Amino acid sequence: MTQPIPASQLVLNAEGAVYHLNLHPDQLADTVIMVGDPGRVDMIASFFDKIEVKRQNRELVSRTGYFHGKRITALSTGMGTDNLDIVMNELDTLANIDLKTRTPKDEHKSLNLIRIGTCGALQPDIEVGQNVATRYAIGLDGLIYFYEKNKEVNEITMRDAFIKQMDYPTDLPKPYVVEGSKKLFDQLAQGYYTGVTATAPGFYGPQGRTLRMHLAYPELNHKIEAFEHEGWRVCNFEMESSALYGLGKMMGHNCLTICVAIANRVTEKFATDYHPFIKKLVLDTLERLSNT
Image (tube, rainbow, N blue to C red):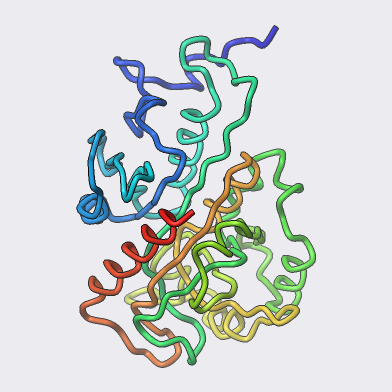
């Protein structure tokens, strides 16, 4: 008989919802659009024909409703892979753990998890305002190595090529590489720039930005830009996709990231008003999801 998961590990709030997301299982749709910014959740929900759930806890805001008959949850995650570790584990809990018995369900449910965000382009041919779909995510954060199943999802050949070509510093977290969902990629990424996304564990130093502190490895960005493996290049920097792909694949969910390039780190261009680009990407994604 399966032992119940202890209360200190499966943490619920006073009303029995998962602790951080503040959601009950029936309040979560099987398709989730994830954004970093809490303010974007209501923008997504503004396209819904009907909203049935509104929940919030700290920066984690959710709206569940219907777009052209398809049930969808819009959810903010906050920034960074550490936040994604919380969000992904609690989404999987809602889908695959019986909260009353505190035991895994007999039948596994796969969620469709689509991250829509912003990024900095790392190739000169990516224009500001262009959508970038992530086929592979390279994690510079080390998160998946805390989980036993990391060996099953880590693209070792590409990872090792990245480490070798980069002459990657051994005192930084060991990189990992995870491929996103081919199903969601084929469904949602048509017509977009596609490639490899580097997920950094910070916005400034880890992405090569300097203010008052100098970088330990100032050449790192140039090496990332020059990386190539079997025709794949690193096309952009952001802060969540490696955790989404790594944890999602280990848990058996379908994951995809599509970001708007609001800056190009090579040409130094920046979109001062990128909100129309995000709004169009959200609407296009909703339309493509509803057509299946």
